[in-house]
Each structure stands twice: as C-alpha cells, then as structure tokens.
Image 1 (cartoon, rainbow, N blue to C red):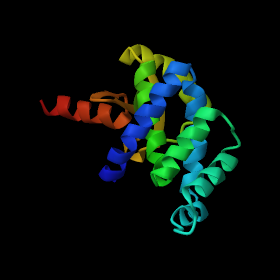
Image 2: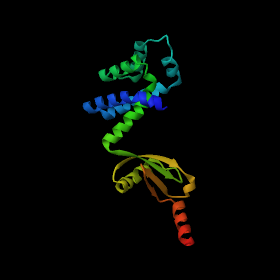
Image 3: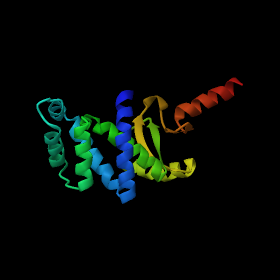
Image 4: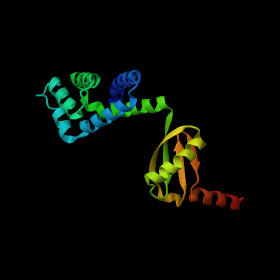
Amino acid sequence: MAETVTIARPYAEAVFRMAKEAGKLSEWSLRLQRLSLVAQDSEIVDIISNPKLTAVQLADLFVSLANDNDTDLVNFIRVLAENERLILLPEVAVLFEAAKSKEEGVKDAVVESAFPLDDVQVAGLLPTLEEHFKTRLSAKVQVAPELIGGIRVIVGDQVLDTSVRSKLESMATALKN
C-alpha cells in the first residue's frame, strides 16, 4: 500500500497543480472520482493487466469510459497508460482530494454516534462543529453503539465527546472522589 501511494503521489501532485492553475479543482475532483471507479472495476483490472493491449489502447479505453474529451484529461490518461500506472487511479484520486481539502481549508471529521445519522442531521450538526473547531469540516459518520447516546467528534488530534457514556464515566469518577 505504501509503495502505491508513493508512486501515485507525483501524478496526484501534477494533476492538482494543473487543476489549481486552471481553477478547475472541483471539475478534476469529479473526473478523478469517476476514473477511480473505472480503475477499480474487476473487469477493467483484468484488462489493464493484459499484456496484449498497448498503452494507446488502454488510454483510448479510459478516455472513452471517462466520456470527457478535455485535452488535459486525455493527456493525463495517456501519461498514466504509457507508464503503466492506470491501476493507481484510486490512490491518485485520494491524494488529490487530500490536497484539495488542504487547499480549501477543510479538515476531516469523524463523527461517532450511538445511532445512524441521516444527511439532514449531519448538515444541521456541521455549522456547530465548524464553529467549535474553528475550521470547515468534511464529516464522516460512524455508528458506535457503545456511546449509548450523543456523539463523539474527532478532528485531527482534537476530540469533542458529548456522549452519554462519557458523562456516565465523569459521574462515576466524581462519585469515587
């Protein structure tokens, strides 16, 4: 895994610089997500590893599947194909997203909840969390039944714990003292 990320990093950095200079970060984000899904398909993985196919044929296949004839995208796909790196598209997409989030000042937040949260609940919660952590957030929700109720939010090395379990532990500690 570490090797693939190391190999994918220069491609992600190059496409990020190109997208940033063109003012098309969001557009490239969608393109890379789409190409990442294509590259993860089991049939496509078999095709990529077929030694009978040339780099040009693989590039043409990906361009046709991308359904996007942007010159920069076509050139990017051709470079990946020529260097036998099409299989790295998922890693390139992840690294691109990380660079995009950093550029936009968005941090990842893990929201642990005792119960599943729908998109409306998360959208209602985000402004409060962004105010608390003083940054824009991209939330990923995980269900953690052991919390009993409430939520625990982790942003980098900061934790906001408003769970019932945390409050019960605090009460138990206070009663022991």
